[in-house]
Length: 186
Image (tube, rainbow, N blue to C red; front, top):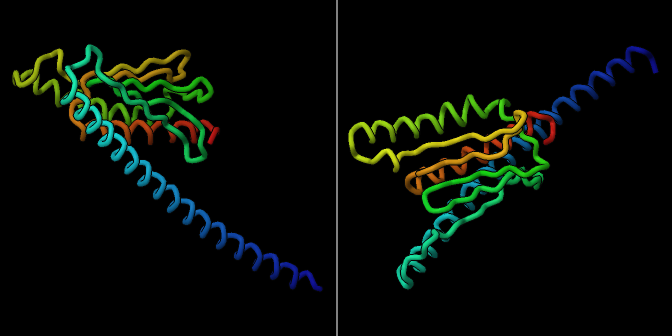
């Protein structure tokens, strides 16, 4: 076999490998999108089921002193437990797991979650407070708790309605997964 034949075969092999890689990347992207859709639907269904269970329980029993809570794990596509999304009454606490080590300054924490999701919700409620449609105590607020730049907890008070709850759940889940991927753990 001549050098020219070897070069031609190597070029064909490279072209095949690149084509196959592109196909697999496209398939992986589709699979990731499908997993996010399924996650969103699962979240929506589980929150609706929990809300109807709470409504049934409250209609048959006198109100309990502490509101029921709902805990949903936030997992990566590969099954790594990143955090727990806990809803108690109108408040949300997202507590990261000790093994996740999610760096708080990693995008998209600030560029997406804070700037495009949390701050706009806070501003909308502040406008309602100024218009005297809700009290200051009922307004949306949040706190990001970190230790040595490692995200420990996200506390959200007065998240609002179920639509906001769904939006927050999806945005936080997406953000934590992207942070985990960016720090080279995923």
